[in-house]
Image: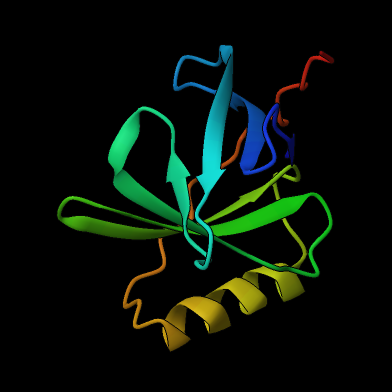
Amino acid sequence: MAAGSTPMQLNLRATIRTKDGLCVPRKWIYHLTEGSTDLRTEGRPDMKTELFSSSCPGGIMLNETGQGYQRFLLYNRSPHPPEKCVEEFKSLTSCLDSKAFLPTPRNQEACELPSN
């Protein structure tokens, strides 16, 4: 995540592995809202994102809310994040009324993030 081209903008870049094993680069542009902790995703006016601070290296925790859904996400560069990171995430989401925890299997290493 890095500062965007305007003062109220954040850019997030990632490379995501698809089901067939390919690595696909992605980027999201978030706009900060003055007086709010919510981020608005460019191109997705119905979606609201909240970032949470975390002590986990190489990871990010967020809450996405859109039309009819809410999801809490823990992304980590490690295929097996430290247990303290998972416990921190479960603790945060339980306080926010989450009822299910669904880890996705990681059988391959994380994709490389190309430099700009």
